[in-house]
Image 1 (cartoon, rainbow, N blue to C red):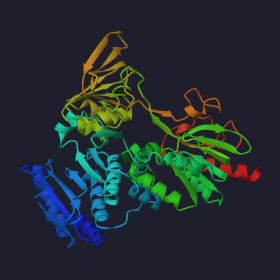
Image 2: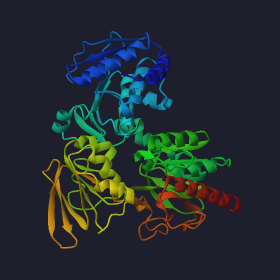
Image 3: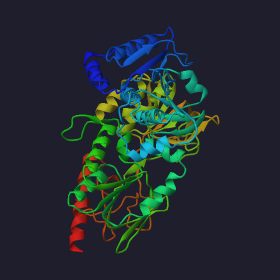
Image 4: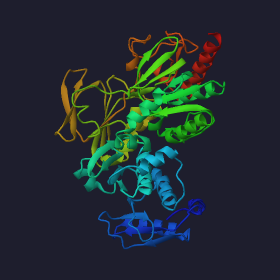
Length: 513
């Protein structure tokens, strides 16, 4: 089942097991079950601390569980955890076998202290790069807390269950049979929702922090670069972010980051976080900024009520997916309205979908989806596509793709539970038309995350923070960088450069004032 090189790597990992573990398979006569049997046999053959039995009684078949001999297993995989989920499998093996997890001690204690029983089910697709975080978080909770069980469910393999629960986006996490969350969720985010007292404790701890020399707001490439450059100057540096990594976490393939021929967003974010933590940077994750108050000490108020102070501030809040803002879009978000074709595409296998937007991201989405779904309708507002010529050529070569130009989407329609189509106006004739479909993938660009700054500093007509060549904003001591600013060309490498520029300017401001 596993390639020789992978088996050698896995064998080396399994040497870290501190005590025996048991694989329990619940199989049927399907081809996937045979693949699963081969995978589990390979794993068991690589370590004398791993045993396998095939008399599992799980109702989901094929599936398997990982546990300790003589105990009911608490980690389950309904489907083959390959692709992006192979790391989830390896971590589950190691952590069940006693290898310590690489998380903060405070997080471990918080997990162990959770009262009650929790049955977590994480619906995923193997092509989703956001799904492993949720799977690994729930698995870790199951390892550390005997009241928690965790099950990864491959939505493409268990289509009947996906349809019955009307799951239209991954990852989707269920807790004790009720929908708990959708989209990328880290262990800290899950704990914040479960541990209702955590927010108050965090707010109290944040409010006690001394003023920073440089406080970076935002944890994407611009924010990470700014924090590193500041910390290297030996000054007190903090970084506060709603989600460390930002938009890059939702990026699958990155092939234009100079010196790195190809990587993936989550891998790059992990490297950024490791680099930031190499220095004495106070990283405050899962914190949303709501107000900026200028003064001798600039104040940043957070959603949880805490206020941070700093001698200088660098705004690097990035951008988010632009929405269509039409009736039905919000009602059917994650119920057919999606923003990540890589993550959610497999859930629409054989179905009809639409892609909104004819730029590079829209064309790439349509091309990717065409290999999975039954039919793709791409709608572009303009009378010409904006995608690169090579993408347009590929797009027009696909038999199951229809391109409609001069189309203004006016409404998302549904049956109250999920999407069943969209309405658009032909901008040339004025005619109103309806397309029946099951999914809509919105790919129309980004919006800067600057709503909370309106009326505080100068913004452009499109909401971007106005900056000069050195990253200065209209407020003394406040600098900005990355996709939230007027810097042209929203690229990772440009965001990093602008973060470094803003940080150097902030340091210059400090030594002069």
